[in-house]
Length: 288
Image (cartoon, rainbow, N blue to C red):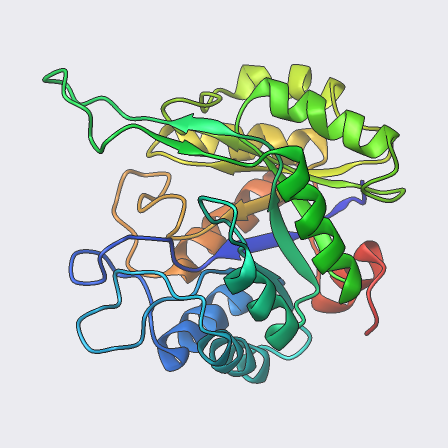
């Protein structure tokens, strides 16, 4: 990896209620939050799309017109920015994400690289939501890769547990992911890998040769130790209101810009620079 740390901002989540948290929904809100993150050093914006109908912004949308309006607004606000689009869906129907890929033509897109029992247990012993399977069988993954390849989109393999990390190495060996696979180590989901910095060297050791990687860290105070270790180990860095609401001092963030500022500080304290848009595109092999 380059000494320049590429910073990604995950601007909003899938179901976070904008009435309770400072998550952007509309194209104007997404662009304004992207600009705050961009000014703080983020050169990649990871985008989920929300239902634009009044009062429905807590729900996701796969309307390609919504996706395009949001990404157009972000690109206008942040010259040279790289768009990284979510594609995660439960079930076999991937037509919504594929339509958004065709509409937006992002430089990168998340590729959920394996299945997970998505669980969370409350302190009273009750499930936080009905247990669900986030299903990503190989045939579904292959269809997503084909759709991404058709639009020159770099897949970013999201790995929620160690078996998925090892599966990505097999996908790479089989020739499914190109010469320089991109991997996100998703840590902090209750039924996946924990947000523990000590795990990082072991996980990185399982990555395919020449892989670029980052940690996606879900949680509160514990996320920042993982970000600091990621910076030390040479990984790319990601934060945003999709992943955490809390700054290193425990204060609640009110914008993505605050979180990215803290992430940039973690990079510089590890002896790295923060990649500019031009450096990011060069490192990723993208056109300027």
